[in-house]
Length: 448
Ligand code: GLU
Image 1 (tube, rainbow, N blue to C red):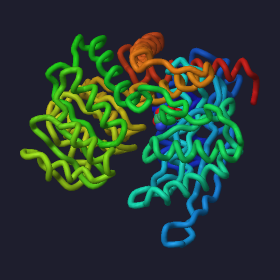
Image 2: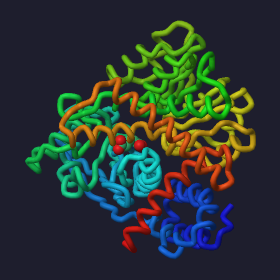
Image 3: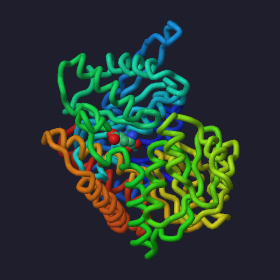
């Protein structure tokens, strides 16, 4: 609950201005709520208007993306880039291509990215972008033409020292390749302006795996420190079947867990013997198929229509890796009822506020997205370093750096939580630790 006068005033203003952006309001409320003890202790943040500046993007770019489909018909999509905060580095954050994308969704993602990027300890500000373009069912040539049209406008707003986009939902190696090619063509400049690039043209080893692997490193470390426990022998429910889910499954299996589910926007599969990841990879990475196919190919596996049902599968650990608000109060209660003790988030904001309240009431270990899924952007930051050095590190070297960053995020979060009287609270700790660094930089740089 918001009780601090300054915090309340800032939130009321956001509500007045952005009342039509529910996801953004949700993300802001959670952060402001947990920052209250920090604000109370540091009057300089109010004196310097840090919060009212933090909730207002430095810049929002919204543009038309016109392209021609395979049938020769003109298509028009909306493109966005929200340059939210550059206090600690150039804007950094992914691009999402999905029909649900609108300004409020990109703003919530960009806002989360500010604190997430700060937590990685690397010098990256917060940004996010995307389009309501739906790549599902589009040909390669259509995706290429769309990406070229998108970059034709975006290129003037970004740059290796200004704003460095990457992937997010539906933006992977294929899209980043097309986007990079078009940037290079227009600017006649070969630079690390995007991350998540192919290995042949400046990409980093372990970037593809980073979000999923990082999620498991974070979860394993939180389990070790807070519960003296591990993944070994645990049953894990994972939602999604994209890049995050696939590599979270791979690492969880490697750490001795049994992952029993995978899902997409149509439904979920349950495999009591443990998910065969090579089949999921073949379906999703091989031919962009639907997860239903898994149950047709694997004897003993079941397919269920509707993706929310995945939260009714009994488990010890749940790793939501699909999308925002995929776990509501009823799903959180089903998880708890069936024995789940840990929820760590691979997707951005996958739990509604009511679901988080259920975790807290029942004493679950809850690892919030901006900490638990920071591995993706962390390795993006390492990709930027490698591009600047003009060299590349081995997989082992990059993976080891990722692991140590995820472990330090757990330590940083717990230390911040303790300092402000919220001992053991990974959510409050992540918000506070991420915020303090950005806030101090904003104070030091003056009123901008
Ligand atoms: N989209 C990812 C995220 O949500 C990665 C962003 C990046 O690598 O810039 O953090």
